Amino acid sequence: MTLLYESQLYHLWCALCAVYLDSGLHRLLVRLGAWCTRQIDESRILRPLCREGVVARSWPESVLCRLLTFLVDLPAWLLHKLYTALPLTFQDSAISRLAFAMGGETAIAQSWVIMLLWIIPFSHWNNAYSLMAFAALLVLFYAGAMPRERSRLDLANVGFYPVVLFGSMFLAVAFSYAPSLSLRFLFYHISAALCVVLTVSAVRCAGDLKRLAAGAGVCVLVSSVYGAYQRIQGVEVNASYVDLTVNAGMPGRVESFFDNPNTFAEVLILLLPLVLALVLCSNRWWTKLAACGVLAVGAAALGMTYSRASWVGMACAMVVMVFLWKPKFIPAFLVLCLLCIPLLPTTIWNRILTIANPKDSSTASRIPLYEAALEVIRTSPITGGGLGTAATQAYIEDFNLYHGSAPFVHAHNFYLQVWIEAGLLGVASFVASMLWNIKRAAHTVRHCADSAARTITCAGASAMCGAMVCGLADYLWNYPRVMCIFWFVFALTIAGIKVCHAEGSR
Image 1 (cartoon, one colour):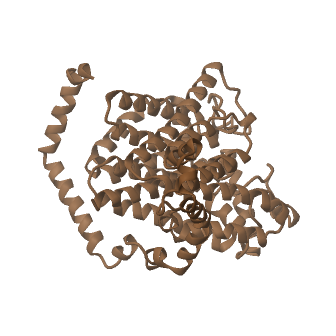
Image 2 (spheres, one colour):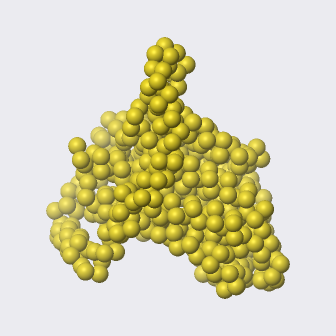
Image 3 (tube, one colour):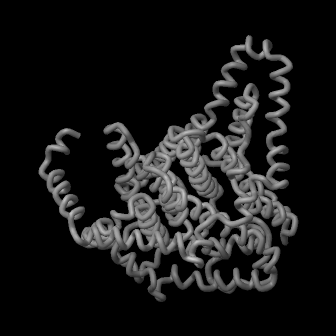
């Protein structure tokens, strides 16, 4: 690092920053930013949109929240009563003391779980692993809560809309066109719900946030290195993934160990912002350097996936990240983006140009998918076809709603697919959950001091924004493991908001 600080490039960068800070452009942008902030804070139209709604604000004190909290905390309460009845028995047991100590550090255990769980190759993956892992973490959390009267699952911070969303999944099974096909998918959503509740409840400080982000970073590193290995070894061009007519000369798309290049790219747009947050908030030079290396390898792997929707999603995520973290850097960020355009490989640039090309078979094939999904919504707008892709496939096939050449797998649109699976309540609560979380994160980071928790909260919110944009052209929950990663980032954002509020109240 000393060599870096003494280099000519570093001195040139410092000089450019000093010139910018003293420039009229900087003063103009500062005034413009202050004016925008005033408009948001004082506008009668924007203020209701930016503040937390009445329903979300009243959730922690509501009867439903208290009832659900009582139910999920009942095992911990019973264990605590057992502990108070037999304190010497547990205090004299080395195994009990070890369980209590491990349960008190559930966030550390979770960081190791996700570190190991998300690097299992697709050929050896079983969707039951997520449910078993988070069920084990729940038991560990209850063990840690046993000697502590106030260590409980935090449904209040999970929020009203996510609770309604997970509840709508049970209704989607009950009203499914094929309940037997939907039941299996319900367990995937239960795994995701456990992930959310445990992450929000287990995180207590910025250190926990950084450990969980580091666990996600290991997934990025291992999968990206394997993706680079695939590129070096050579990847056969798959005609089902790319139109060879309009993408002539494009190499095969790497998929790492996620079975599908789009799936691999979706994992990266969810986790790369967390790696960037580690770069920005690491205190030691070697951890910062390691995070930079992981970020570089992950960004290269994202390029190798040739996933257009994910590229657009990542671009959106980076814009939101800069806007939330340091809005004054937006001009420099835009200039940097423009300077990087000539450096893009020809194959990537040509792939970008096909995004709006109607002759691209991948783009054209989405039209009958959207039409089939809209037909499901037209015929069954309230309940949809049933939870899970299998139930909706059966619904569409039996009613002859799809007329494309390729098989119908899913709607290739996040919002349409959630609607046809979980019905109107499901899609409404899904959109409300995303907006609620992103809006709370944006409001929190605007009104708190710089810290690691603030940076990771910015990263989580930006990853959610990127995923929502990517979801316009793809369905991120097609693979249950990616669904779990999605909800992990969602929960980490809520946990970051909680830590920011705790730090601000000290």
